[in-house]
Image 1 (cartoon, rainbow, N blue to C red):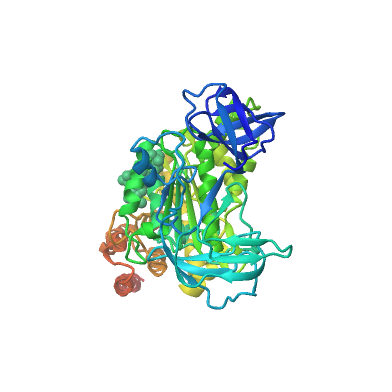
Image 2 (cartoon, rainbow, N blue to C red):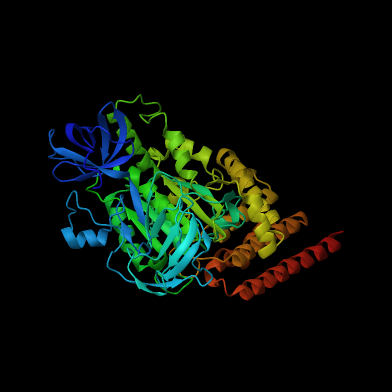
Length: 599
Ligand SMILES: Nc1ncnc2c1ncn2[C@@H]1O[C@H](COP(=O)(O)OP(=O)(O)OP(=O)(O)O)[C@@H](O)[C@H]1O
């Protein structure tokens, strides 16, 4: 505690909101409350009184107990040692806490996020010599943080001047001085391998760019139908049990991002346990090592009050920005922003603010937008491009997408992967609904697909979506008047749509082969399904009965082929394609002959 002048006395306690006589304190400053020294943050000032939101249960705390300002806002430590870590919503390392206080976290416990004793092998930047002009983002050197991630030690924002000294290569702990920089005023800044950053303040960058390449997730309904870009913002709304967790885990596991940050902000305790148990088990398909070597988890523990969820999203995104600044592509998954918004609602309710929609404060939309605004692809000060892709799960009560959190989120994000209860009930996974989902990135993604995979991508994608839309129309007719009312051509349209649904959109996360699908395989399957449909359509025009086509064994194979051959066995898919063409051609010849005979 740096400023003993800022000490005060607790006046009132209203759940997690504590009013303290604390003259001189600033809004946003962190406070240690009561004899226990509970963590809190000033959220508003009323004259000499500070209204503080606490991140730990205030049970047993009484008016009259002391409180003291810490001297800085809620901030995180940024330096080597974060990767692979599991932190609580205010960045306390959970494994260390468990060592110190057992399974039940003692309130007021203060453990720094980064290990002070650990030695890191620092490789100094070879091009940097004393006397050099340096500024935010200058790479001082590197540290191999995990086998997978090289941590670049950068000059932090706000420090600029002449490099006076840089440490030689060697082992250092994070508090050792590794450089000194003299600024224009003559002040010397001592730099170590870590610094603190206030979580509510976006980290600066040189400039913001538009996203250029898709975040490939290996999930067909995402990459092919509703693509996300590196640096994009997206939402996964879904009713209870529709598969949000699996979608997020698939993205975490298979996406071509460098780093994954998962923030479990207040989903039910057992789900969090599931995440904490599952992630350390996952293998990294790209490095062959553990996924945790490039993953970081933030988890609100169940003994923290609801309002603590509010902080965890900022803690996660600040760490994401930190790795982005090193030039990495980071994906952050927030599960779920609905629980985060509930924390806003609770605080605003306790502060007596006027509720607007369903009890949420008027600033819900602007707070949501401000969080999502921190996603993006940027030009870092020194390390080239870096990005943060932010994907928030939304859990609308009763699956009602018109409720405030879902509807405001929809206005902010660019990709919307809407999970459907009907599809999940029908065991169609991922249950991303092709009617209500959307992506604002199709044009940009198309450029990538055209260059990297096939120039027909956009056309095939549009054909598949048109067929699915037609399917919905025809199914309405079937429901009204029965299937007999449909013509052969219409019945073939239903068959084609079902090939797209079963052969392309459905993808089991539990299937060893199909859990990941490379872009080339995604296109091969889509192209094949559309080709079967188109050829069948021509045959029906020639008079081939739809039942004859429906009986073809190749339709069943089209539905299964995704799990028969891996992304490395595209030649097998190509061979099947030839079989399809031959079978269709044989039918065409047969009917052409019959046509000749009858005429
Ligand atoms: N892509 C998939 N492949 C195979 N099975 C899936 C897939 N997605 C979901 N499932 C099945 O659905 C179940 C529920 O999914 P999940 O736990 O992700 O739901 P959820 O929406 O996160 O639930 P909650 O609302 O409780 O958060 C899974 O246990 C799994 O059996």
